[in-house]
Length: 116
Length: 116
Image 1 (cartoon, rainbow over the protein chains, first blue to last red):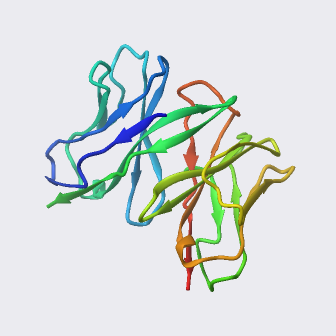
Image 2: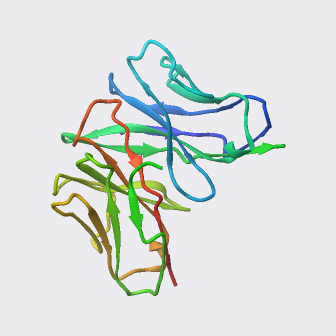
């Protein structure tokens, strides 16, 4: 079964600096998808960025980018120019196939706090 | 705003009671997924419906059930509630049943359930 590991329970970053949130995964599939979601204190889950296993380039979405290292099975989220509004929980997730369907499995999350 | 709506936002009830959580998927999405987020278990997949039919089951208790109606909204029914059922319940939607690897699930704002 697939597994997602986020080893940083909490992190601090100074406003306007960049920060990297770690995510490692375990899968035997050749084709897979990795996702990052943000959960602010209000509770909603906000989709940030997606990386496919066969994508040749690292995914980028505005200030978010993915440092995808397939051989190391890592998909770290990089947030550039951190803003106070980036303070939230961040979850790495992977798609797990099930009988003509799929579900997302999530890591335990990293709480990011941006300092002014 | 993901386009997925959930009601109610908060729910407080007593042990032994039954509650119904409601979800409306994004316009055009046929799949609805239910997830539970609790402090001890993290984010876990419960069940998926596609176009009115149950398609996949995760760690869903027998006391819990769900359905998807012809207008594609879905309801999650939780009965004989226990203290441990207190959690944030998310609904997510996607266009297809098992779409391409990059198909993203968009989450609703969640229903926060407190069982006293």
